Image 1 (spheres, rainbow, N blue to C red):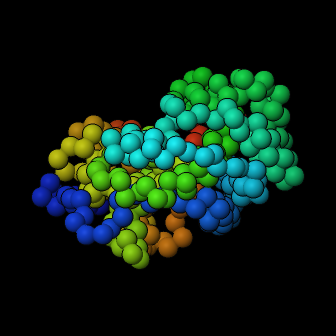
Image 2 (spheres, one colour):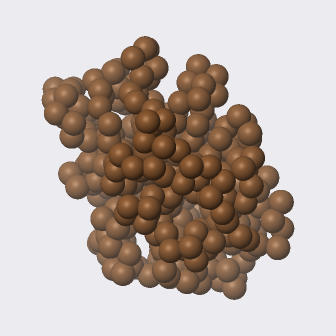
Length: 312
């Protein structure tokens, strides 16, 4: 795959914050989100039927759907949530709201859902190794993944740990529905949990043409002015690099920090899902890397620079 600058946006065209009732923060319904994501991943996997990696991702996302009932959102202190939002601190911060209390319940439920599927031998072996890992070490690895300390855990454990963490945080984030209007500003990190985005999506419908960053962990969506680098927020121009000008998925590339984040256009692909479509477009990552750009988003199903060992 080759990429080229298909669009260049000048500083004067950079979109600002909306001055109407456009929501700046949207917390998702975990059940709806995971079902739609799994459905999308099944479609993408079928389109790239020669990819055992995508087939595994489809199974893992279906397992998330199958074990959603194991996750019980925890009660939150409303005063703490309110003060956190007012002062631009994530109320479900990955540094303070940690998974110990429900980790084993959710991880075991996810494992059981996966084991009921026809897994590839390499996948089943990787899952079994993680199951045999002491719970304290599983939690240590989960915290390392949250902190983006990718070297602290095996590459083949990442998808399972990431999937379990997504279940915990996405289910909990809905409890913040009454507080979303307290989010007023811009942020490069998720205002709910403090995680990196996986990509951005330009929405349709009530949020038509507005860009939202999609959290890699809790799936919350927060408004981000278009055509601005979400990594360094330079006022300088950014480039859109992709296969064609009409591609539903492109890389928004910054010449200042040399970082990029994928941007997806729902108008061109109504069922697009940030996590699933990111996984199915690794060829774009490779092409952008060859152009000298570095990925600034995260996807908790893999770690950058580590080979996947669950496919064989």
